[in-house]
Length: 145
Image (cartoon, helix red, strand yellow):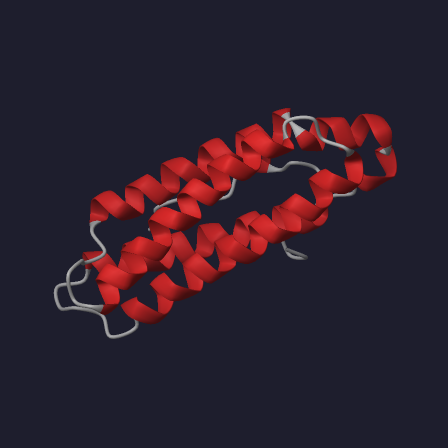
């Protein structure tokens, strides 16, 4: 059973953001499955690294989008994103050095963070984008994402 399930209420109304958020949900679910296994999953380092890379790329895309629409809270959002990226980079270094394992608590932290992030997107720049350009709010069906 999935640890985090995409729900229609998670949609920010912008296809590319919804696609990226769904990808992050998929990676968090893969981390969850790898952590719960009885034996260490050899794919865990790759999944953890992919999750960190996916977040980094998402934040770059998000920053460019916020700049284009003139989002007033962009700096605060960037600071939150950079703090998470710094934490993940530190965790990746510790993980690679064998000093950290990906724990259920870490996966829960990522799940909770992503849920809060999606809700901030909906209430923040997605809402502003909808006001400035309603044509941006084109969503896709679940199959297209």
